[in-house]
Amino acid sequence: MNNTYETVIGLEIHAELSTKTKIFCSCKTDFGAPPNSQCCPVCMGMPGTLPTLNQKAVEYAVRAGLATNCEISLYSRFDRKNYFYPDLPKGYQITQYEFPICKNGYLDIDTDLGKKRIRITRIHLEEDAGKLIHDSGCGTLVDCNRCGVPLIEIVTEPDIRSSGEAEAFLRTLRSVLMFAGVSDCRMNEGSFRCDINVSVRKIGDSTLGTRSEIKNLNSFSFVTKAIEYEHKRQTELIASSGRVKRETRRFDESDGKTYSMRSKEEENDYRFFEEPDIPALILREEDIERIKKELPMLPDERMKLYLEEYRLTSDTAKVILSDISLAGFFEEAAKASKSPRTTANILVSDILSYSNEGVFSSKIQASQLAVLSDLFFTEQINSSTQKKLIKRMWEEGIDPMLTVREEDLLQINDADILSAIVDEVILENPKCVEDIRRGKTAATKTVIGKAMAKSLGKANPRIINEIVASKFKNEEKT
Ligand code: ADP
Ligand code: MG
Ligand code: ZN
Image 1: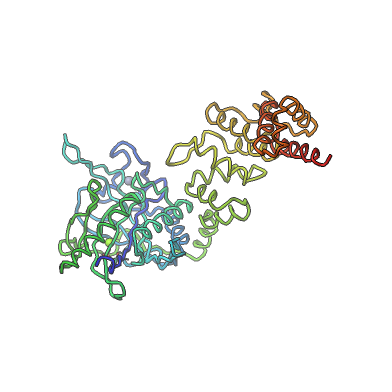
Image 2: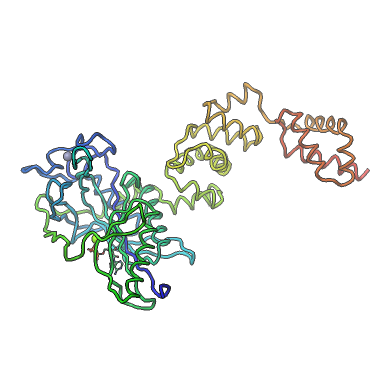
């Protein structure tokens, strides 16, 4: 029964913009500052104060629109959304209702069946509300630091059909916004959070079912769980001849279920009206062109660069592009190195194992990674030396070039020297030689290993291989 119903999902995502100051005043937006240390009469809504629009916030919203293929409105406008809640000292939120700054965009996501386009209805600018802190000792406290932090709200069309697609969309959007430099999108700090609208309908139906809206999810796994729970709840309700109510629900992390908060009838009447204290926002074509020119390279374009210019494998490129600080670190090192591909491989296979999960932060400087990468790429050190050096660079902060010189770690590439080493090994290991002659290939590896050891790990393994192979081949002929 359940299988004959499909899920229909539309998302409303809030992202805090990375401006240094708030949207209508010059208070700072630093996360984690002591409560109420970053607010002023404007963002606390004192009578007689007037808002001044932050130009950077407008630029970031335009960037977000350009990065998500939206039309940018030359005319947009702010409106007041009136409601009463203790985290909103003004008694209204300034937002954009009828005339959003961006509209009609899209992002393509990867699904099991290939690319899928998810349309973006609109992106509008607004201010965040404060935060309530429920303290068991003193009751509920209000922190106004977040009042007036600039947000963009991104609203999608109901084009999403599964929790997997919802997650893919959110991941794609998050990475686009981060690379566009619009938001740091830290989900644990609430700077990227979303409301999900979910309904179900019989497959083949052309009208949408009644939806519920689940508020304020701040992790991919909560989004997935909430959608799956809603699909089950709604299909079961319909199967037992019930009706889905249009309502707002909340997701409970502890049991993975959603609970009704209020039905549509209990919804606030927001009494929207044009914000009288801020003039209409008029953009000129040349402003948009300038912002377009300043737009940092987006994930798709970076992927292309990594594959075509830097010659990375797509798996390596994906790993690096999963984290903006990792990508930044890689690009800095890649620019300074002879083989970006080698640099990327060292980064992904060696350095990442030392870095903690989460946001990448390196104890090694990008320029030093480039030096090490070049030492390896130009065959001045071999891979085991390279790995040992990375470990010491990370743990002890050694300088790779200096250490290679001081400790005489240069790879031995001289064929005569290596040939002499191999000869010694052959003389000392008649049993191995016997085995090789009888066709036991494992014995070849033993000879190579012993030669490597004799060189104190500094021999070029490729040349050693060639020498060993040729010595026994020549023998066959004579
Ligand atoms: P509201 O003003 O109540 O927030 P909107 O029409 O702006 O409503 O839609 C909000 C979000 O809900 C959008 O992402 C939209 O795609 C989604 N949505 C609308 N109708 C449905 C539905 N029947 N099922 C699932 N999602 C829906
Ligand atoms: Mg809504
Ligand atoms: Zn302020």
